[in-house]
Length: 291
Image 1 (tube, rainbow, N blue to C red):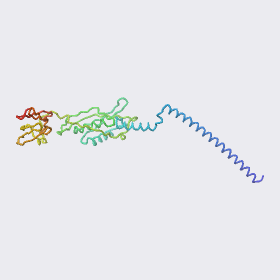
Image 2: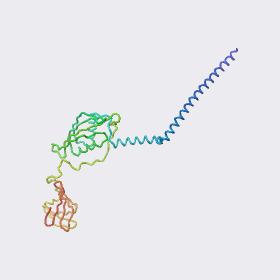
Image 3: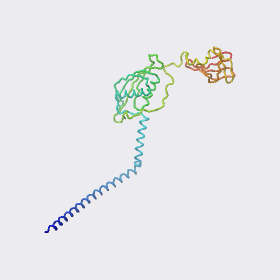
């Protein structure tokens, strides 16, 4: 057989084999594609049925965004259980509170034995210290209203032995709850900002007391050392111990109080005075003073 014819036959056989192999490969690919297409259609039908029975699935992105928003609100508005707790973490947290909100509060920190309430573990600590009553109030306010679940189990407050105004001694027991499964890391919990109403007075300071002598009140006329020498429906005229004439209208300040009103029919001036912790109504008549 001539060489050229033999090569042509061999080449033809190779082309046939390649063609058959390609056809087989394409056939397998078509079958795989058909199976994938069939599986896709089945999944699509399943998804369609799920959407029909659960229409909210079409709002997946909205639902996820809503969940993220609720998580954010939870961190901002609710008490949150910590993921873990240890003495170093709690001490630093309390120091952060005092440095930010009550810098003049001082305390000693002691670790007590912890325990469990139900399935929830907690660590216990005691704080013993002293400070301004308003600072202590603000410190307690922060512990109670900041997100981490720190619970003041007991507290004792007493007047300090140090002769400093509005300073008290305190002792408190603090429980810190945590849960590794459902808790949140303290680093993920921001400090809350909220309005705060301070104490109006020191509860350890008697609100009824002996008459006070305050330097800042001396710049006003003392009605106990003055005489009412004249009045009109709108004004009163007092003469102080030095002989000076002072004109007052309702609302004008006097020592430890103010002129409340003028009783024209009774020809007297009525003052509101507070020198012993309670308000007193003092009437001054043209012919003298009367309580």
